[in-house]
Image (tube, rainbow over all chains, first blue to last red; front, side, top):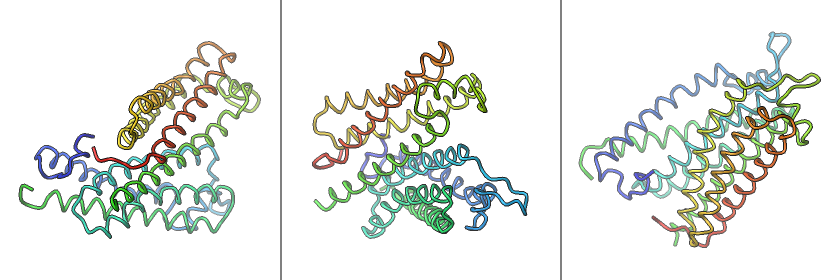
Length: 160
Length: 149
């Protein structure tokens, strides 16, 4: 975590290129995420509802409560780790304050919204599927935006 | 001053995120084991309409948790160092968090090894871990002003 406490992330080549490689890996992860979401639960509210509660007409079995809660528990852990790393980098990035003030809280709050909405879907609230799916895509967009901004900053030519 | 307030808000939001994570953990515990010593023992050794946990399943659950709880505690402890003014209290809370997290991860093996009579270890370590987390989170959000390291 030492690199996270440096004010200038481009000052040391080791920190700069390690972080760039890490962010590149993160970008790969982000590119796989919608594909994985599509395989697991689908990417629209109707598909999400069907994946959770099943649909006898389409021979889709409901997800058990333990499997469902396990999944949101793991997803939330991944999102919280992503958030802490991205926010720690973001607060040391020379970006417009408005960009930071919007994206940093978004990365931290949307996973909570997503989890609460998913829990409500499991309890049978159909409207929560819209919130859950919207939160997923907004969070994904925020991750892409911040990871992209970090990469641009680190890969820009020059020493500092 | 403005930056300190911004950092404070971010710390508060992260604690909210971590608290939600803890709630999902408690929810999962409730679904898998329940809250009495009898149901916890049954969750390990099986019973009516319930399969036994077994060493393989325990290993599959414990192994990722050793990584996940360790990382979670590390992040929380690093935030404690980031905000805390009194070092000794923070050190005790951080150590309690790490040790209770490790103990809770390994508690299932104690129950499986020594029998249903040790179900209290599973519940006790969970309560210990939750209290340590609550203390750490409270200390982070109630700190007067985050400081830059």
